[in-house]
Amino acid sequence: MKIFITGIAGFLGANLAEYYLSKKYRVSGCDNLIGGTLDNIDVNKINFFKADCENLDEMTKIIKDVDVVVHSAAYPHEGLSSFSPYLICKSNYIGSISVFTAAIQNNVKRVVFCSSMARYGDIETPFFEEQKVRPVDPYGVSKLAAENTLKILADTHDIEYNIAVPHNIIGPKQKYDDPYRNVVSIMTNLILQNRRPIIYGDGEQTRSFSDIDDCIFCLDKLITDKNINKETFNIGPDEEKISINELYKILCNKLKYNEPAVYVKDRPNEVKHAICSANKARKYLGYKTSVTLDESIQKVIDFIKSKGAKKFTYNYRLEINNENTPETWKKKVF
Ligand SMILES: NC(=O)c1ccc[n+]([C@@H]2O[C@H](COP(=O)([O-])OP(=O)(O)OC[C@H]3O[C@@H](n4cnc5c(N)ncnc54)[C@H](O)[C@@H]3O)[C@@H](O)[C@H]2O)c1
Image (cartoon, protein in one colour):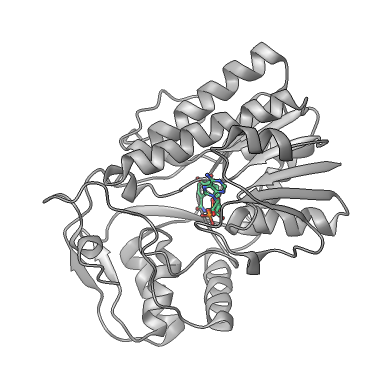
């Protein structure tokens, strides 16, 4: 099987590439390296292109002779999307449409799109795949728009597709010097530098985290299982939700850190509780949580320790800088 992964130098893309290389698949992929790094992948074994998904001509050239395209590239910055909406929507929507178009031009059999639970927005939890959705930020809207466009194009041109809706995924290879996303990594990176982590709002917002290996188990089905087609699946556990305050306590215990977090104003549009139902994945993909949250957090800590704590980098321009913009970003506090 020949697979092309966009965003292959990022967290999910690189872990997927490693998995398929271990299964002796032929793996190719692209990344513009805004959020990913070549340290994440073995360029001797992967046919790697430094390319931007928004460039349709380039995508048309490089997505050649493959069976499946996994579109994982994105600016996956939900919080930032209300302050840099142009940057994030352009990449996530236009970039996606460009990849889908190139895949169809090249007669790819199947496209698997990595969406996000931001597609659901502020609706009752747990989120179910078939529920009426109401995204509350530009990131969620851009993901949903890409999903809808993929469905239309796939029906029109008769190609297979699946849509993955992962929870917050954590694990090795995740960027931990990005001040705009990845709460577990940000807190770990700060604590390792003996700097107090920041919590937005009262910290009672709840999330559910999914281990990268459990996520890949499900994604593999969406990518390779012929009987699973034209489906949308939540991917991740629904047994173990956790508040940001509880998460902070776990990290403090593991890292033997005793300082309290710094509490700042909550971020506009942040959904208070975001938990997906895993019923459909359990039933049709055989999903089960094989890595506990505690084990998964330990994997993140071990990874960051092995690479060393890092200074944060501000790679994305703040397009809207007003009284709603979090001070942490305006003042580059991290
Ligand atoms: N990690 C999560 O918790 C999570 C949760 C839900 C959904 N997702 C989705 O899964 C996908 C992967 O997320 P991730 O956590 O691996 O993010 P990531 O930032 O680690 O990886 C994304 C990669 O895409 C690349 N990229 C971005 N825009 C590009 C473009 N226009 N052209 C080429 N490359 C581009 C980046 O350089 C990066 O390497 C994203 O689509 C994201 O929205 C992730």
